Image 1: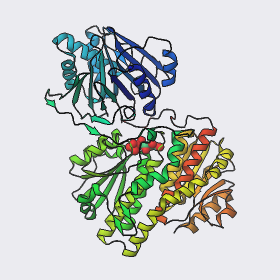
Image 2 (image 1 turned 180 degrees about the vertical axis):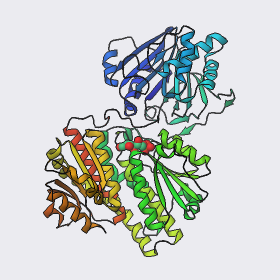
Image 3 (image 1 turned 135 degrees about the vertical axis):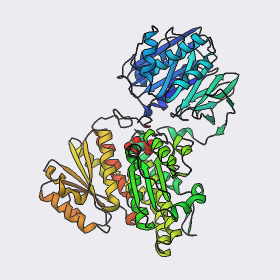
Length: 612
Ligand code: F6R
């Protein structure tokens, strides 16, 4: 949560930082601010609202200066207000900080500082941090980087911080623990940000700061050290990220662009890994460890939200094809449950952002209990990618819309490949079935393309139901996690209450909700439970519910019973979630757009949940 951006160099720092904040707005958008260090002053501007509100507020002000820090906030401590917006100033106003993360022991530090006469203008933990640093600097008569280092040895929690000093406009100090921070390296200039998206238009040379590292940046160069005061060598990496991957490219919203990108993003997940004609399937990243899954007694999948839904689909793959028991755990529950991890268990952690705090903590816990951790991650170089022992990237490219779409299908694609490899090695599926699955997986990008061609159907149905107050999503087998995902997509971006259920569970409670006002979305493609789901549709119709059914092309039965149908191409039952989820993503997108919701930045949410 929260996006931080900073710049030091010869360019107009304000514009670099403002543009960067716009790129990072998906991380938080309840308030924003910028501080510019120039002429022995810190020009500070901050405002409740989004980055454009800040931009209008700033218009016409003196914004010159070659060092600036900026922040777009997702509130943790203190409501979204002008005062609580970052940057925060130290007591005498000479230092400014931007912070992403949570300082857990801030209240004891704050009390100590209050006793010494410090007065705070905000309710934030971040303001406490900068007062604390100033206090240490004054008492120890030390350089700012040393004061930051000492403070960080006492601070407990997670942080990515950048500090500017009004007396030294050629200096920025950055540090991280637990929250992401990337430094872009230019010629005589540095760009800092929570992820690489604000940086790529200037440079593709980056340094990912490690936990407990402090960077001291001047136009003349960078010094890295850890909090034990030992200097480290910056590891400069070249990143492969194109500017058009982070722009809307003519679409009204990032979410719509990302939905339509799925034929390509799934293809990218398959590229270089699958060649069905030759019977080849290999994931380089996990090759040396795959036998650990082959011999696993149990697989534990850790994830949150949509990634958890991808994990549920994978549960069906691994149990069905590999005959290994699977538990799919909410990372947030697993980490606090004193879970049992046995020798012989394999853990698979799934995350788009690679920064989800609960997933990261669950991984650390499973590691401490001796588990071997596989990562299925999108964001290259992210904290989760680095915390896992081994992994396969999903290669979906940047996902900017807060509601996850293309990451889900790419996660399911990669997890299906892992399960196919394991099943083949274990001999738990026949050669024929294995080759059929490879061939079918190769056709998925074109089937998703076909499902997208029917986007108008979803749009039409969205118009009929955009005023609904509740929705029920029902599916069975492989389509049950898709029902959960469809419901999550709808509620998070349109604020319509929606629930996903296994269709058979309807009789155990939700059926009481059904009346003529209640839209029920059935994911009812032709599979082994088709007849059963047809009966469930009849049960809803008997109670006058409005049925929207996702059906397989050519289905003649369900269209006669359901009120509305959307067809998707035929595929293998196990791979159907990759196709059947498409109309549900589109349905929620169009409903949210028709309702005038902020599709890419739904209220209260942020793309990367770096707080627990
Ligand atoms: C829903 C959504 C969230 C994320 C969840 C996990 O559309 O985006 O539910 O799936 O916060 O995030 P990652 O995958 O980044 O760990």
